[in-house]
Length: 311
Image 1 (cartoon, rainbow, N blue to C red):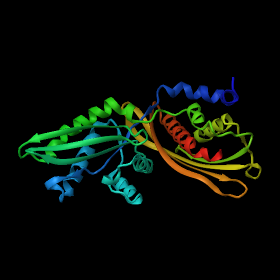
Image 2 (image 1 turned 30 degrees about the vertical axis):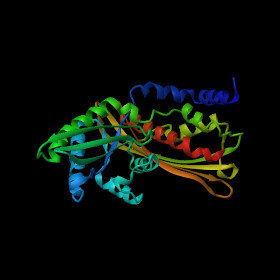
Image 3 (image 1 turned 120 degrees about the horizontal axis):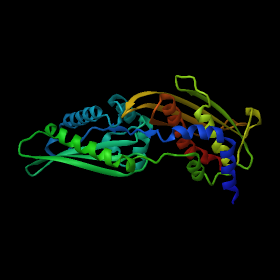
Image 4 (image 1 turned 60 degrees about the vertical axis):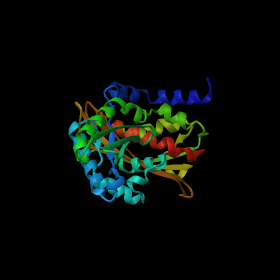
């Protein structure tokens, strides 16, 4: 057995009671697809009329909202995020920009599209993009003659809904565990260096065993770090702020949306090494289970990227 596997097993056994408690509800927890619908791009003779593309996106948003198969990002938040990134909907062509937008608004799936005429037919084409997987699928609707684009939205909405029901698992990133996060960080060797954790967590209910703290401790121990009791004795400091709130019903479950912000510093110099934020939405049999799992998932996903700075 190699040393890395031994460290993983040691960290797991140290927290075995917590893992057992978590496993009783793991089967009940579902990753909720959070989707952002972008304005559709107008081409051809309708290029001057951007309002049609906006209206198509608005109607598609409403139809998806009524279907109840996903969480949706509000248009105002989406527009604000695009402004912050200095991007337009048409400018989201690279996986990096799609991931940036997804992280900023908490969307795991983006829906963009276009409307155009070819011959005597009108087309609506939707592109469905996994922001973290870069996987793409799509569907379209068309009409002959003098039909209006907006008349095609119900057909397109039905096809988009079907794609989401069938292919969400392919578009969404897989659920992350401490083991998969540690595997992603296999180049990071703790070598008994000490890390101080400064964590705040709020789920609007009293809850034992803060999810962020538990996951970070398990991960750091698995990588060979030690947990410091005070900041003065630590080589590194990790600050983590986690907030979860009720996101309503999803299918027959209660869902929770979590936002986690994480920063890594050198303790002595206070130099910032890495920082980032992400969002996760999870549904479970109870709100507290959904909130804790959403925070745990967001923490591990973020740590799997940011802790690379500790190599």
